[in-house]
Image 1 (tube, protein in one colour):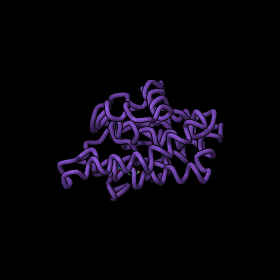
Image 2 (image 1 turned 60 degrees about the vertical axis):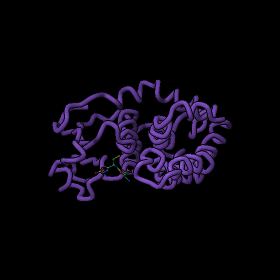
Image 3 (image 1 turned 135 degrees about the vertical axis):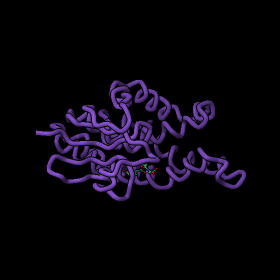
Image 4 (image 1 turned 45 degrees about the vertical axis):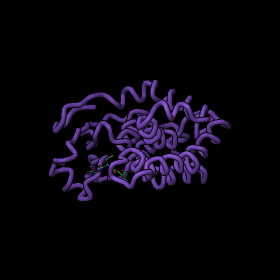
Length: 208
Ligand SMILES: N[C@@H](CCC(=O)N[C@@H](CS)C(=O)NCC(=O)O)C(=O)O
């Protein structure tokens, strides 16, 4: 049986969540590290919208949304907790906020030159008030978004919070977000993250 193929980009937060889910679920897969400016024709033929991650299953079925890849991965997994816990209304709402408003705020914060003066700091502060404070409340109550055990919502949200912190680590670490900071540091130090960030050659299909 050939492996499923994941078109991926190492630094893309959506591709990170997909790779972490596949690794956690113990799925053997091949990976193709793309160059964003020169996407492979085979990937665009499978998914014309041109975003990574894209997963092509041995059946030919194509999954081109990161959450669909996570769901597929955890469906193959013996432990239903990883996906089911991410389906609670509070986790679904938090992932939707992460992928929606928080992602937009992150982009404005990250690229201040592309926006009006002051917009970057304003969006940073809105992200703190709208999203990070909610995440903090949840993580003060429980170690993970999945409770005592991590779930797909933890994996979905952590890569974007990582990017947000990376804009200005000193600023992030100085905020009153102790539970979020500890949660982020634990993910950064995890074997799962280390494995998902393995360096691959570009433009080549390899066993991940
Ligand atoms: N909703 C998509 C978003 C994926 C996405 O936006 N990926 C970015 C990279 S982080 C991308 O491929 N952008 C296309 C480009 O930059 O050309 C998902 O969850 O899979």
